Length: 118
Image (cartoon, rainbow, N blue to C red; front, side):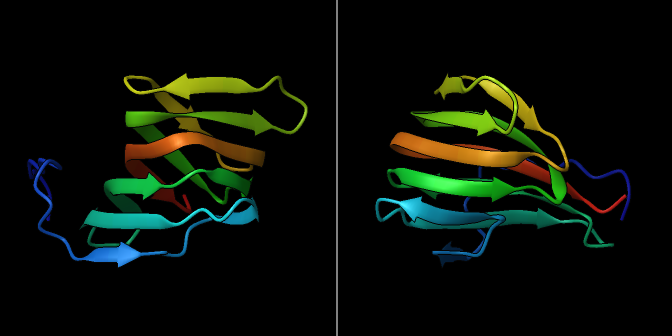
């Protein structure tokens, strides 16, 4: 359905605890919560809110992701690139094919938008 306005501030979607995502926990005991607030009709666009407790995740992105950090602090390190530390208020994109680690230093909450398979 085209031409919709989709505010993502309402947590009306069901909560998925420890929901699957492209990362694999490699350090600590991180747990996640995901509220997927929108899936496009073709299933290629996902958007919502994601939370994680502290720990280190191995990442291997097969999708493009837009992130807006609402709370917490993390460091994302993409193979071959210097690490980038991000905190509440930061907005960033992770491109398809990014591999490395995502370290959550302080419990994290973010808006996300995924674009799957082009």
